[in-house]
Amino acid sequence: MPGFEAEVAALGRTPLEALLAGLRPDAHVWAVTLDGALAVVVGARPIGPSRAQVWYVPSRVVETKRKDFVRAMRLIFPALAKQWPNLLAYAQSDIGVRVAKHLGFRVMAPVRQNAATLYPCVYGGEI
Image (cartoon, rainbow, N blue to C red):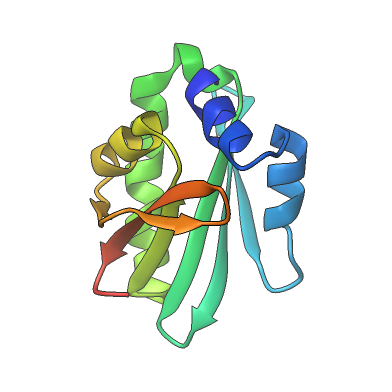
């Protein structure tokens, strides 16, 4: 997905490196399929008793099934918020910010981390 690839490139990683970075021992990871094809891998890493940092890595399937992708993701984040009421994600591009807003996240003021500008995105309570 071109928007995701731009986000990953902004951090100096390949899509595989981004996925592997999220697969830490304390992460909870799910695969979402659309019409039998892998569409997205979603992960959550607890960062406190009621907080988790979430991420997702879409496949090219999402390019042709955007509405189905959004519907699925809109089911996933409320379910995650039941376990962790405060979800935090980061967007690194304008496309990432638009997707985060579309999925129900509140986008906060940008922060600089190393050479990248990150937009903290909050779902649920406050982080």
